Length: 328
Image (cartoon, rainbow, N blue to C red; front, top):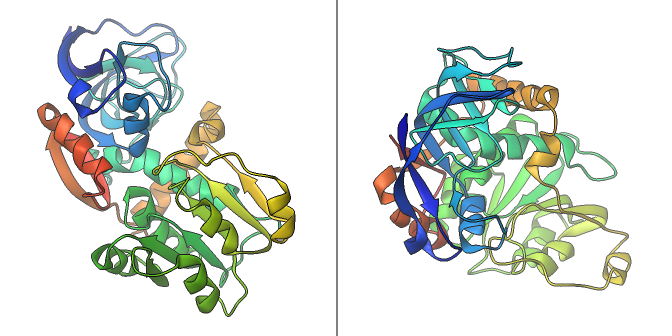
């Protein structure tokens, strides 16, 4: 079977993204073949394309999608041909019409959730799930607590704004424009800070009455690292889950002592999705909060597969808000 797919032959800019025809065979043990209806775009895709996260070449990109299972390999019992399904999964390869892939991280998609929504929400929604439910400060999080979330108008951020509100948390979001700050507020952020106009660390201290927040969720990295530490109360946690501005530079651990016995972690989604059971539990939690209406998945941009270069340019230029998908 032939499928169109997006491939790079070497790391580089968006111009390296090429549409190619690939042969797709039958699934082996523990695998499925899935025909995609929509594909999600994520910032991690740009890290893989640029070489920040190194992979063997050539590389077919894409970490999340939704579609219909066409065939299952030996040992796969949680899916069958004809099932609607969605996933966030390794290895990459979602930028395609059709693929064979490991079944472990693929979940049945509830009938109430559209394919486009499924494609847009799996990686970003399960990222928010592990952050708000599992990446917690030493003192835990209780309703009424303040948390700081950088890039609050992005795909992960707008889901986090809504889910944090549903959990009773007061989320302070940061973004680079007034319009993006307004978007975060409309999706449930308690406060929004335009970091291009204000010192976000000083503003966080004002909002919290000088106390600081228990946890900062930071996908920006290098540019926000020091300011994020300054936002934390004693024993607070800085969870760096992305490098939008580049990796955090080396620093002296004594800094954490001087700022109040702080904690820093660098979690990844796929550590949390290491088993089939944990993947399903996370997906069930996400499906439930979306089906309840407490969290809506904002798809703000749609691109054809053929326009993937432009999609990457817009993503890296911070021109996008909410979720972005490739349509098939």
